[in-house]
Image 1 (spheres, rainbow, N blue to C red):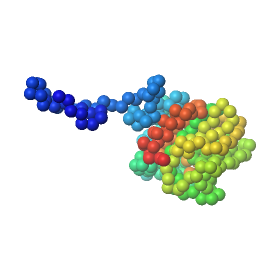
Image 2: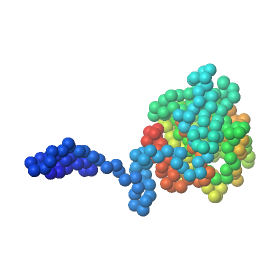
Image 3: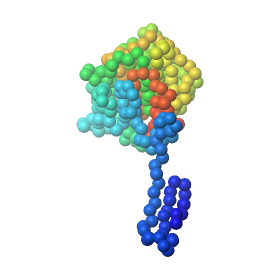
Image 4: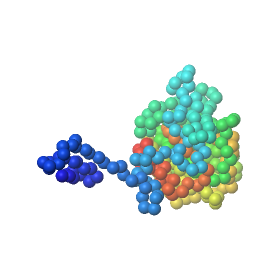
Length: 278
């Protein structure tokens, strides 16, 4: 006879005297990965092992497990290798400007710690990024501190092009030519808390920002194409060392288009699973 012990699991027992004696067999079928219409179920993203390497149009994928430590000083990050096929690796020449390696920066995952003053990483030379008119950028980061009137850059796209980070307790957008500086004041950043920041620009000129998957009601516009030389990570790009990020960055992802709702949901779920962001 068959005895049901819980939904989805069955225990077969040889209680019928006429039945052959067999070993008890317990099985549990895995959850279906796809929902109605063949759409990937967001609830099963963690079970599926989804990661940003599956994103279409992936340009850059930096994650803490691809950090290269300085062999002469293992506490320093000498370079951060691109996990995508594009090899847009980042580095910084002077050891005094290298961020610190942290083995457990966010939720026990490795990352780079920036000091808010001198440390940064750049993409340059043969590793330069492509020019992009439309894109989405995700950054998993934990600010160590926030302060009114203080600007901490997380990523910049080269000379005279937009950069993003935190300003006081808000995410910010800045553009140096023509000059513009704005904050997404409806989104609040708290020191010591981990976040998934997303900045995206589609076919129109508007920049949108999402914080932990929540879309800001504010948009900012500019004519824009990224500059291939000297993308900055942990700062705003060339010449912006006074605006270095203060805190930990564990992951940076760039795709060549404005992310779809499904891509954003996947990234949000992945960030929640992997980094325990909200």
